[in-house]
Image (cartoon, rainbow, N blue to C red; front, side):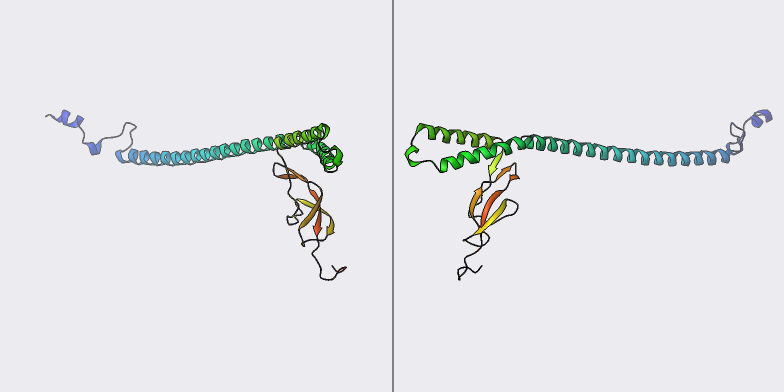
Amino acid sequence: MDDTTQHRRRRPAEAQQPDGSPPGEQDVAHGQELEELREQLEQERQRADANHAGWQRATADFINFKRRTEQEREEQARFANTALILNVLPSADDLERALQHVDPALEGSVWIDGVRQILRKLKGALAAAGVTEIEAIGELFDPNLHEAIAEGEGEEGRVVSEAQRGYMLGGRVIRPSMVVVGRGNSPNPGVT
């Protein structure tokens, strides 16, 4: 090899970078740039995770909202006819009272049987609408179900008679039973 060829060849340690900077500086700059890119990537991942978590919360909130709305709609449908039912109940009460006081001479008549059938149909329609009767006689007095109108002879705290039947609609009291509650039998008459 001649001197000119040797001069053209440079050793790698002496080679300059394309931008003219010494060989080690560019590697350091690339390392810093790579570290900055890694930090940016990590920040973007954290932001993406936060966005994903927010999306999951929003989805869960929406599902809960839909469920609540559906429950409220069902509840409104169930209780939409409450006013109508409350207006019909006195008629059912009147029919029951009338049938309890039928003259024995009319007991077997077709007319009385027709009234009984009307009452059965009315009670069937109420039951189909979700209306149930509140059991009262012999039960412990419950202020959530019963309205005490008097005290009478009988076991203390138990319902001894019912003046007006109570009703529930879908597990909710729409009219409490009006009842007489036992005051307990005292050993001395006149002492309570």
